Image 1 (spheres, rainbow, N blue to C red):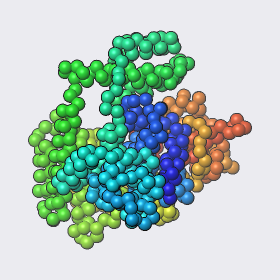
Image 2 (cartoon, rainbow, N blue to C red):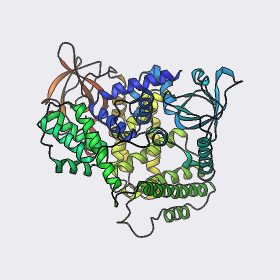
Image 3 (cartoon, helix red, strand yellow):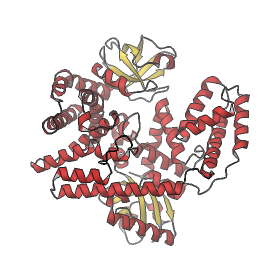
Image 4 (cartoon, rainbow, N blue to C red):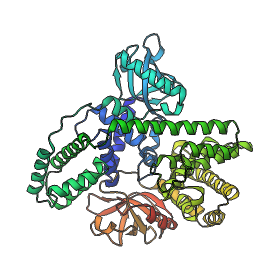
Length: 567
């Protein structure tokens, strides 16, 4: 395995994402955020590589509910399994070069300054450039033991003062709060790669250019007040550019590249004006406040975990945790920070479950722990207000079982190169046992739902998993991600379908109930729910590539959780 192999796989995944309009929009918005709102179409190849690593390996996708690398795993060829494992096991950090000579395999010895772990970077080309005392900024991919590969997007800095400052800060953080020393790709980009200052034209000049362009294109948006409202009302640059460019694409024939550059410059000018105002946001102060809050939360959670490991009373530990997070002060309506809910939602229940299993001598295996945590994340995402043991109901349990559990199984089967049926049975046992524990320890009433799912769904889920595994893996050539319902059983590679979600007919050029050919093979039954990519073959005939199959019982859950613009 070489670094170029990993780079090539990420590039192929990016090409796959760009063929799906919904995922392509996610990719575009993440690039704007990652590059700080700057024009990301003219970035260096290293910067593009770092963004791919952030998008696929760190950023949670609204489409998948997890990182895109895990969401797309069932579609990746089995021969790339080793590369996928390396991508999933990678991490971004800061490294000090300790040794460049006298090592076998022409490696370079480095220390991960966030964790203190010493690694061997097996990169012959890099070795010829590195010097002892260099600071390496970027991502590494695990090989064997302590060997790792360095990302093609990483950078090498030779700045002794900077190295000393980084070692001092991370060393102190690591000793006091080990978990807080972890670094993300986005943090490294903000700290080391983004320009410290940008030349921004005066707002009135940029606004005049943008409005003149829109007026010439015949757009109804060429009104200064409306444009300001759009920019000031958007929470992010992506939220501003996305709707604007979409309207221009449908309503005009203007050059969208020019429109995007002008709109991006307009956004930057608006932000510069807002931040320079006397009463504007004080970013440095806000950043320090957020850092302090994050530090306090981290310390509180670590104290909770230490107490749990020491066997202290769990109720008292929860009370101390709530007190440290300010959750027991009777201010239910005024809590405006979402971060504490990430700690006091389902997560404490999972920790309690793990502790209880360990107490009776049946500790959670790594796979089961990851699955239970995935349940917590799914339930937290579904619940409004944030999930708690009291908010768990039959609908949430069914939603997880019908949609998230099969996706978990597909990813697990891919990672292990195992058969889906075996993974499904293990995952179901884990799910069943956790829900039974909830009924016993927290007086939930999930047993009837579990029994119904076991009788009506388990066999159907295994069939749908096999269909998903066996469906075509060809790359789509048109818009993708549409959910449809099978009206008839598939017969001779043909099936009758109808759109599942509102608005799908309009987006797919008037698609209603009709028969289409299936590219590849998928023996779906009437009532099955199919996620498909539409494909027009060389003969002009319309067909579908089946990407995912769910049992018909998942329709209500799918309607509730997915926006109508699911493509």
